[in-house]
Image (cartoon, rainbow, N blue to C red; front, side):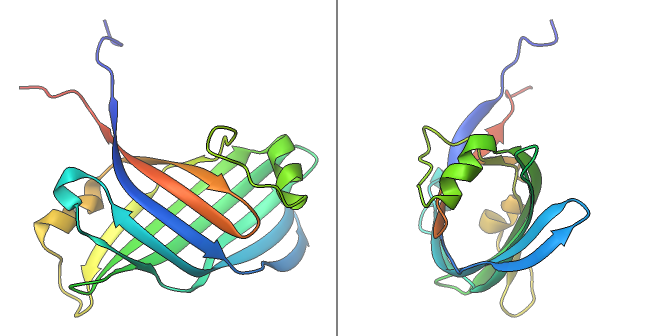
Length: 173
C-alpha cells in the first residue's frame, strides 16, 4: 500500500527572534503589506549530530508579509541570516507560505501571544550554509543544505519562537 511508510519528525533547531516594529508599506493588490525586521535573536541546534552549534540572528529586515484581512490569510516571505558563535559560519534561512490566520491575526493585533498549543503557524524552511571567508562549511553543517524541515511557531507582535523539525523518511535498503 502506498501509505504504509510514515515519515518521522526529529527535533532540529530552536530559533527565537525579537522583532522590530514593522514598517507599514500600505495597501497593495493582494492586501496590506508590512515589512518586519529581526532586532535580535538566538538559535541552537538540538539534533544529535549538530549539538553545540548555536549563535545569533543577524539584525535586519527579515519578514515581508501581506495580509488579506477579509479572508484572514497571511502571505509571508521570510529571509534571515544566522551567524554561528565559533567558528564563524553563516546559515541563510528562508521560507514563504500562505497561512490561514483568521482569529489568530485579530488576537496578535490586540497584543496577545499565540502559544504553540494554539498556533497554526507552520512553515517549511530551506537552509543554505557557508563560512565567513566564502568557502564551503564542514559536512556536519553542510547537510542542512539538503535537509527537509518543518517549523511551528509561538508568536506575538514582538517575538517569534520557532521549533524546527527535520523530516526523516523511513530507511530503505
